[in-house]
Image 1 (cartoon, rainbow, N blue to C red):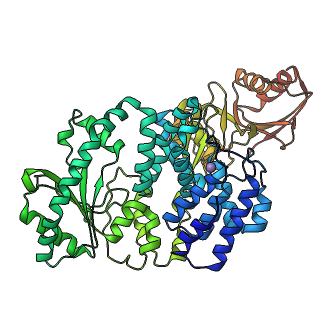
Image 2: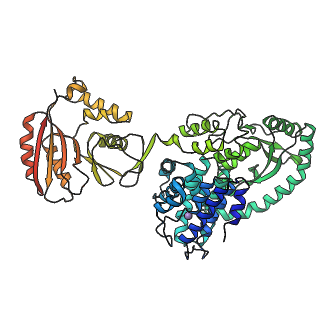
Image 3: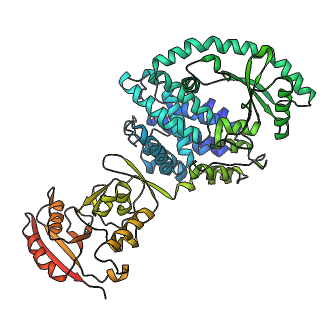
Length: 576
Ligand code: MN
């Protein structure tokens, strides 16, 4: 196992000696890191990063991505000789350590196999990765793992296949990388639906052959017709439909294979846009199209950016054949998605019209817009940073449910996102198991737990920091209904507040809950709970909203009586 085949592939599209040197060095490091380590297949582990790098050179990715793919498992604890981040940074620089680290972190996201969470998980992966190259490496990693899944112990196979079909294949689809998407799905298919898979294999195999023989016969007729119109295709081939997508389609058509007109489709790659439409006309001149089956995805691309002309015609001997007609650039986009722009950035000025309907996520729209913008590979690399995700964050409930929030959101926004009542009753929050102020800005991947006080009302000063309009509206509404009604937010501010600082003899489970229920029993609203410092056992601080100052002394006495409370100090704040 050596690096030469990859260097050879890489040099076909990138001749930088520095990049070559970096890839060779990454290979040496990976070899050391995985020395003596085996895959389930009993193959030397280094074969896996090499396979990932191979997939990525086929996508013609930059040197940093190739080097990072070779290093992608070296930070893992179960590497034979795990590297550390500093080491990689010292030898390979910030860019590569970022990519390697990103791939390692993605591997740690837990997948619970709940389909309804899949969409959020996909979004979270994208947001956490920040750089699409991280995802491309992850996809290459996953593709090779799927190719070798039969070596993995049986009990693990299903989960990995499920994760592939729910998360990684749709991610590849979103990025427009049809080639990887189709392969991932077909590989997972057999593990998830073995019977259906065998049925497809048994029934489709000879049909594919039959179709190909037939199309061989038809080819000269098509080429002759195109020649009459002065159209010379750059490429002409047939493409067999991927098994999984065929099965999906069959499910909608009572498993009737005779209705599958695109089992094998003819693909015409043409030099320019005009000849695409020219070829469509030429084909329709000799064979009648099936009504409603002409699709112009050039004028109206699919949400993931796919562009092509499709038509289904009654071909020779009245057999039904699907044609896909597109330019080289569109073809590369369909197979390699956004990666394709590396190859075709110079010809990327065809003035393509991208329209997406409203159901599509905003980022798909932005992605399409953004695809049009750059003109140089370096610029593209820069733009690969997924800046359009920077305005969303994804945080988790203690049970692992993912909550999608705007950037700058706080635990209060989080609480309202879960349930209105939880928002209203929100008294404090734990972020990653530490008590934190309610105005803390949440970060991607934070685990947030809300401390609830029964019958609590939202606090007017939450307005200052909440981000979601849902939380804002709710707080406004409740305050209006409450006894502060008629008072403006600022007038409400004049109501006395108190701050408590409680020192514990020792921390124990349930202590915070006990304190907050004593406060509730006194009919006082908690505005905020937080620890004074990050140190373990640091004093607990509470901000309270009183109805009158006289409520405070009896409350202090009651809290003093709680077991484990060593001392309590308090102060009144009255804004004027
Ligand atoms: Mn790996």
